[in-house]
Amino acid sequence: MNKKILLTGSSGFIGRNLTTYLLEKKYQVYAILTNKKRNRLDSSKLKKKYKNFNPIFINDIKEIKKKISNINTSIIINLASKYLRSHDFLKMIDLIKSNILFTTSVLEAFPKNKLKKYINLSSVMIHKNSEEYHPQNLYAATKKSFLDILKFYQISNNNIKFYNLFLHDIYGENDYRDKIIHTILKNHKINKNVTISSRKLALNLLNVRDVNQAINLIINKNIISGDYMVKSKNFTNIVNLIKKANKGIKKKIKLKILNNKIEKKIKKKIKILPHWKQKFTIEKDLIKYLYENN
Image 1 (cartoon, helix red, strand yellow):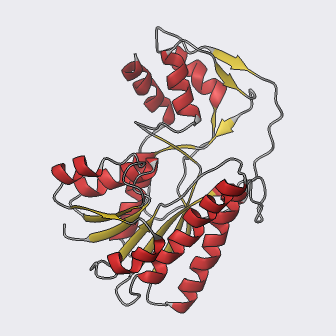
Image 2: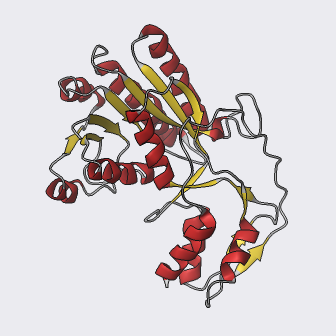
């Protein structure tokens, strides 16, 4: 396979997984990396293992045009995203720089006559518990702002197909983020309580490998551009998930359940990506991870 992909956000959790996935599929991957020292993607190791891996190091946004304009690809995948639950003044600057300025600069700098598909990962957090736009935090607001910017480019470039994939909670191997599955595994290993905010807490949990397959589908299929949801078939009650997992393991997960109020979730009505099917389930995956964790 000779297709070339320009990828942003390859050092994040989803990005690291997608990068390896695309390399294994024999795509030529051009990964924009903004900080050689801080990112979790071991670019030197990948470069030795995969001849089709091409890291592009950028120290300043002003360098973007010079470094990417000559890449002969028709597909950009944008995973670049800085996530913060809360922020202060300095963190606000980094948030806007990463989620709006950097991502827009890549799109503006790349020659539009080459580009055929632009795939952007977004979040259902921009809606919180509402059908309408209702950002949960400034991070969600920056994600929505970039969607508005994408709309401008979409109107201005009819020859380019733009895809926005909306995700809920993504999990998978080697996930070091402060998320529920990582917390369960970490606390189980050190024999510490897993604190759950409510018996009613339910999350839509999707394996990152299913996200990889969704993106690969868009790359190769002639799918109508637009907004699509990539999510699990069901929301999973976390307390029930842990209790079920405990039945299949000797060393039990210690559970502490609080009685916090859970806001009612209003499910945003976005079409599921055509031709895509979920292959992995958290119930089976958690048991697998727990055995590997011991």
